[in-house]
Amino acid sequence: MPTLIANADINQAVVNHIQSAGQFLLLVSPHWGYSEDLLKALQRAEHNVFNIHLIYGNEGLQPEVRQKLSELTLKSKKIKIYFYKNLNVKCYISESGCIDITNFNFEFTKRTDLELGILFSVPVNFKNPDSPEDTKFWNSTCDEAAIILNASTLVDLNQKS
Image (cartoon, rainbow, N blue to C red; front, side):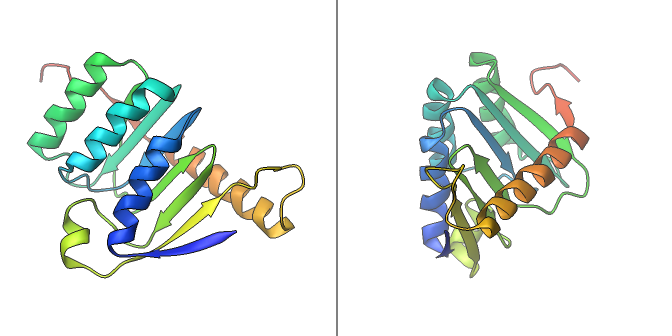
């Protein structure tokens, strides 16, 4: 069942979502501003999650964010960073559900903008979900996320330019 989340609750919902992942985590956002909350959540998730994929786009990564993500990828082969040109999607997906956000960007948005997002939790018994619409929504979300991931370019943040 989808849940509406707004403003400051979005930041905490995304952090909680990252920390509750166990099998896979796909984080998609065109802008990754420096956020201690995000980095701490990724560090904790790295110990529990088999595969973590982070996709960014547009202007690239801020130097401080690039450095922190570079350090994370050196420590763990589980974390992969990708680039997708002209990205304007904000979606955070794991096996437990997804968060789709209208225009949320860590650090920038929580201070200045009004935002709305949808938190969708995968039903515990997915073979008999609450409704066929839930199954259709989940499958469509995963399909679109896979398209974005497959069209993205893997980036080695530790490669010398």
